[in-house]
Each structure stands twice: as C-alpha cells, then as structure tokens.
Length: 447
Figure 1 (spheres, rainbow, N blue to C red):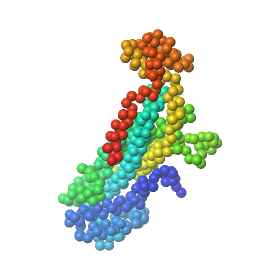
Figure 2 (tube, rainbow, N blue to C red):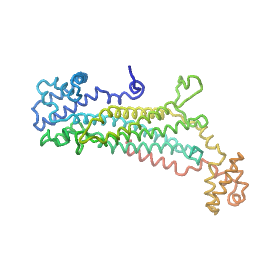
Figure 3 (cartoon, rainbow, N blue to C red):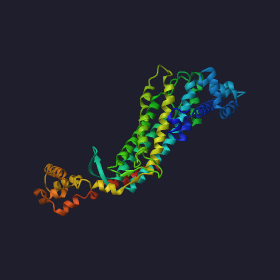
C-alpha cells in the first residue's frame, strides 16, 4: 500500500524514474564498470576484465543486489558481490582501490545530471511560454497594485516579462551550478587516493570522462555537501518563483477581481457543496508544494558539516532530500507550464478594474504635468493628494474635483485633464521593455 503522496499523486514519470531504487542501483553498476575501464586502460587489472564487468553491469538484476544486502547489511558491498556473480573470470577485480562513496557519490552525480537536464528543459518551456504571453499582451493595460491597492497602470505584458526574466536567471544559475553539482570522484578511503597508487588522479579523470561527469578537485571520503546544498537552494529558488507567480494568479482570480482564470474543464467540479465554484486548485497546489521544496533547505545545509573525513549522518537524510526536492520541483514546473498554457485573461474585467477608481490612479500623471508647467512639485503633490481624498470620500470623478481647483484650472484645460486621466496612455516604456527582454532571452536560451 502506498503511503507517500509522491508515490501515487505527485511527480512526473520521467523524474521519478531517475530516483527509483532500480535506477539508482544501475547507476552504481555503471560507475563500477567505468572504474574497471579506467583501471584496465592503465594496466591495473587484466585485459578483458573491463568488458566482462561492463557486460555484468548490463545484466545484473538490481533485485539481486538487494537480496545480498539483506544478508550482509552493506549496500555497496552487496552491489559489488552482485556484479561479481555475473563476472565469472574477473569478478575479483571489481571495486579495486575504491571506497564506497567513490561509487555512491558518483552515482548520485549521474542522477543529478539526469535530473538537471529534465528541469532545464521544463524551465526553457516555461520561459518560452512567458515570453510569448508577454509579447502577446505587451499593450494590454491593467491596474497595477501595490500593498494590495490599485496603483498606476501597468501592462500584462510587463507582468509576464518580469516573471520570464526571473526564470531566465534560474536557467543562468543552472548553467553555473551544473559543473559544481553533477560531479563524481575516485578519492579512496579518506581522499588520498592511496589505494589507487600513482594512478589515482588519472583514474578519477578517466572515470568521470567515461561517465561524462565533472570531477571534484579534491575531496575526503565524500563529495563535499556544499555542492548539494547549493543545488537544493537553486531548486528552492525555482519553487519560490513559481510560488510568487501563482500567488498572483490566485489573487487575480478572486471573484471581485476576476482578471485571470485557470483552465476549467467542462466536467470539472469546484466544490462538493457549492456548484458554482471555480477554484484555482492548480495554482494552490503549486504554492503548497513549493513549501515542501523549501523545507529541504535546512537538512541540506546541515549535511555540510560532517565529522572528520566523513560520517554517515548525511546518507539517510539525502535519501529523502534529493528525491523530494527534485520530484516536487519537477512536478510543479510541469504543472505551471500546463496551467499557464491554459490560462484565460478576461479583458472586460481588466478594463473594469483599470477604470474602477474614476481617475484616482492617474493622479501621479496630473501631478507631474502640473510640475512641468510651473507648479512646484511639492505643491502639485499636495493639490493632487487633497483632490484625490475628496474624490474618494465623495465618490466623484477626479476630473470634476480638479476642475474646481483654481490652480489646476489656471495651468490645465479640461481636455488636457481628460487626456492626463486616460490610463491607456500612461504605460511608459513597458512595451519596449518587453520587446527588449524577449529578444535578449530568446537569443540566450531558446535558439
């Protein structure tokens, strides 16, 4: 019976496959085969051994390694013995000079490499989608909000562009992170490579070349966990960006705002008792699981300080941290792409909210124009503040209040005031900013 929701509710098949136990064991087999290949190339083991061990790595059943572990109580030695059973001539040469974490940490590097490739692909899909949305809506004027209150106008294009820019930075961070995270090592028991003899450094270089992994510069018995903590930090950043985007999506879907809507299926049920409900459940799921990804930060950081050349406190912890961080990050990324792809904008409501304050959201524009015409900036601010408060309290059009002000009338004609209060004409360089960002990010990451 399944217990963890990751088993039956969350996660994509492709990412789960990387963190399943069978794939993990096959990574261990693969690392052992790469070590044998390097050692044969350097004359440390007999000719023909690497070929037989590589074949054993292909045919050995992961289940057999688990059966042996049940008998001897050591996962890495069980892997070696399972491979040796399928290597009748050269099984004794498997694992020569290696310590357990040479194989374990390098196998983790293989899993990390594969996982990062999946996340990079999904991030680029999200970037492309956000850039398309930004360009399509670069002139769609809407109410900007600060502190939850309507501010001056902005555009949906700029909103999408800001999110796209953030996703672009995550792709850049991933490119920088990959050589530090997708790594392996062949350092021996405490990092001296003594058991490999004079070939230690070359063995490490060759093994990582065969596996297409980056190699550490130095290590003790384990790859240093600051690398993995940085990687989990990166996933927490990605999750937090998704959290940010979909909190906004939820806000904009509130009944009284209703500018945005998630895709809602024809047969979808919003509530067991309120048939009218159209809840933003996908956005809420993204925000909820982002918390779980961020929760992996503390254990990841606490895995950095280990006793002396190593202890085992990181091991059990990472069996939870790595799968949860990768699987949930991948899940919410995939869900984010689908949700944004099915998102619906509601132009009528966007326009309604833009005009909701009867000109109050354009007070800044009038203030700046008064200052340009010779009214002091501070005096102009006070005029607009008092006029805005009057219009708000009396529920009047700001234009009507302004026309009662002698100073305003002496500097601005009625038609000028009307033009200044048009929010569609007050979006500055927003469309150009969108176009510039679109060109930049497509060139960097999508060509």
